[in-house]
Length: 248
Image (cartoon, rainbow, N blue to C red; front, side, top):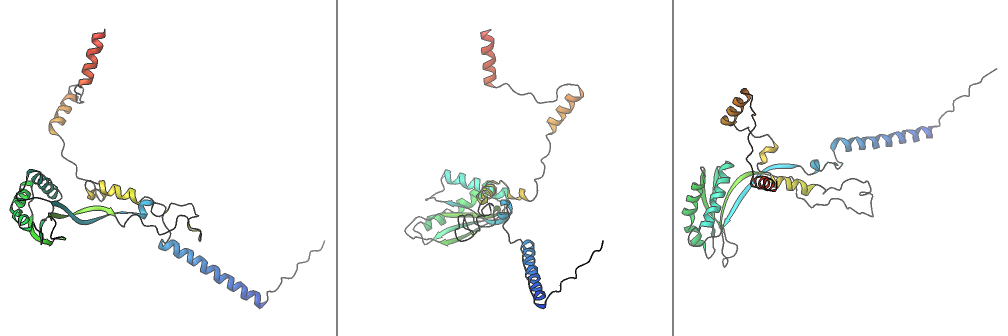
């Protein structure tokens, strides 16, 4: 039996040119995909990456409306504000009195009492005073007490819509992926509720152990007794037990 091999067909110059053009366009398409993946131009499906929580320093302000003297309610607010400033280690607390308002003289007269309340509340750093222009000379303007502290916040403003959710002119919303603004409000709520934003970067230091409780537990364990703390009987359980005994 005889087998014959067909001669390979030769490519014409025009076919080679078409092949080179196709390879060139294919290389450009692959290069575009590689650049898209490398630079991260696609929107991430993780809302924590789209809306990261960042730490930033911003002013914490207490507005104080007071008349001729510092009343008890205003003093309590100043004491609480001073305690927060001390706990956050604020080096400077600033007091700004309104300038140009009809009550600016009364506001300036309150400065010594406000300073004394801040010291009583625990402020150990410097207390500076200044003024700010009143927006309306006919309205009552407050004293502004402020210090700068670290706060957690979303790196950008929520509520932005870079893509249309129901676009009829493009296929942007047809890929069944989370829309860009999803999760921004969640991140903003978490950032607002943080007690100490620095906990996001590092854990807090452990508090010292209760020496008396530890000594009692170790002593009870050595004697073979129960080392757990005794739970006090509540009023509800006591009344329930008495009713049960009475029914018997």
